Amino acid sequence: MRVIAGTARHLPLKTTEGMDTRPTTDRIKETLFNMLGPYLPGCRFLDLFAGSGAIGIEALSRGAEQAVFVENDERALSCIRQNLDFTRLGERARVIGCEATEAIRRLDRPGESPFDIIFMDPPYDMGWERRVAEVLTAGRLLKEDTLIIVEASLATDISWTKDMGLTVQKDKKYKTNKHIWIRKE
Image 1 (cartoon, one colour):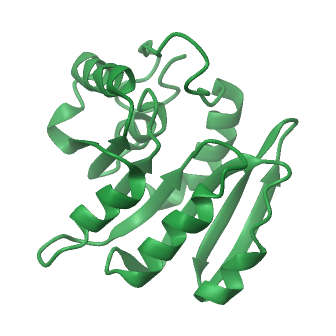
Image 2 (tube, helix red, strand yellow; image 1 turned 120 degrees about the horizontal axis):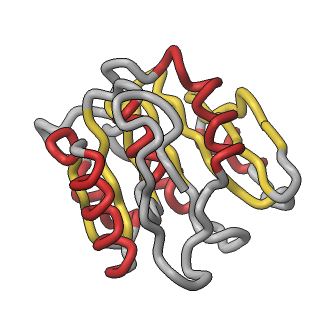
């Protein structure tokens, strides 16, 4: 795994061993970031279920002003910190070690700016997408034009978005998973 483009282009990234995380392949990451390109410069990026931090690091490399990484696994947190140090992007990053909905509650306080882009890659088929969206829509971290991108299994049902005042803008399918682009209605 590597950084594909930007200031940290071609730098290799560490990943955790085992099957606890599913790193997004370089090909899928490249497709995602080709679509995200115009939205990245100067944005505030939230990487939930961050794993190795590859998605947030790619965003920083391509011009995001700040990225917040949320991960609950200690080995993955160590990996994120090492990758931020190695890519020299740590000055514009913040790493939070806890469960995603708890991190959102911690971030949702006066003085904390909302996010422009929120990316989440939760464990597949466990309902995390909906739980995270419920906490996000109840708080102040979403702006009117915040883009939420969910990486999910092909079988993931997101019909609940309408009930939360959210709308699906795009549903990009790959061989084994998909990216769902969501915004406020």
